[in-house]
Image: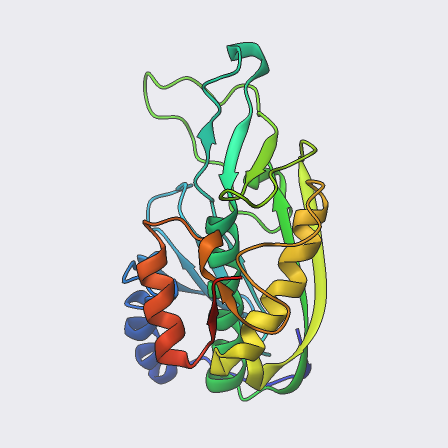
Length: 248
């Protein structure tokens, strides 16, 4: 939420300008994925979504004053070394941090460049074990014919790459809050990484981890904390944006 709101006028002309750009947006830093398949007008702004009713896809609301929400279904894996009735869902730390940075940059760009908001912004990030339980989440999808309804929700553990510490606690929800300069987020440089580090640390605290290893509070990308399959994308992005990399 920007402290000096903007004003995005929505009419047929402006919607025709925004719709193709948002539908083709590639907001995941260092990746060419297009998570939004459709753009619709909603009360107070625009909704970015998947056209299928109650899809398990990303959902974003971009409001006319520059505020915004992005609900993201994060990929997790089951811990196969544990008995089925005691299973945990493993969330990779670099996935969480990457999605957090991407959301901050995307929503900030909407606020400044599309709505004309300025100043500082108040940020809130929520991590929940079941996305559809959050009040801002999309409606839960209906099961397909023959598909069982979702059953037990397994708690989350956060996995960092070695030698960085893993979770000490299970977690069902975590929250982070921060204030940042809007231009710093939109410019997607060290200011974005510093804000992301502050927010990520708060989320990691819920798992008993003192610091989110993928980022430093000086605004650096800590490469050893990113898995080999995601390092190239984040490195390319950081080099392009002038974000420093560190091996420590």
